Image (cartoon, rainbow, N blue to C red; front, top):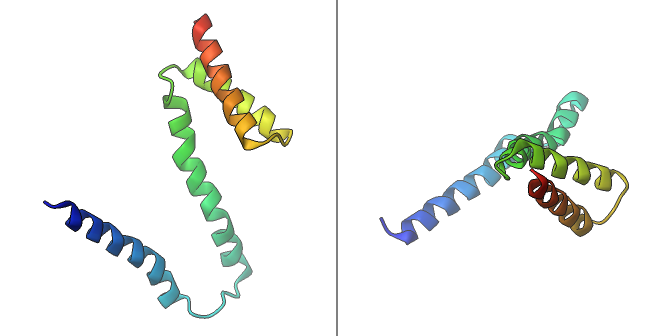
Length: 99
C-alpha cells in the first residue's frame, strides 16, 4: 500500500475522533459529575500510558524505579521539566552502573 493511503486514513481517523464529540455534545454539559469525570480523563489516560513505559524502558526494574523516584521528588519540589528529566535519566544511568 502507498504511504498516501496511510496518511489519508490517519487524517480521517484523527478528524473523526475530534469531530464526533462535537456532534453529540453541542450544548454545554451541565452535569457536575460528568464534567468532573471528563476533567480527569486526560490525566488518567496519560498515567495509564506512561507508567508501564517508565518501568519497561531501561530493561531493569531497579534502575527504572530509581529514575522514577528522583523524577517524582524533583517534580514535587517544582523544579523545571528539563532538570527533572535529566536528573531522572542520570539516576537511572548511575544506578545501572552499580548493578
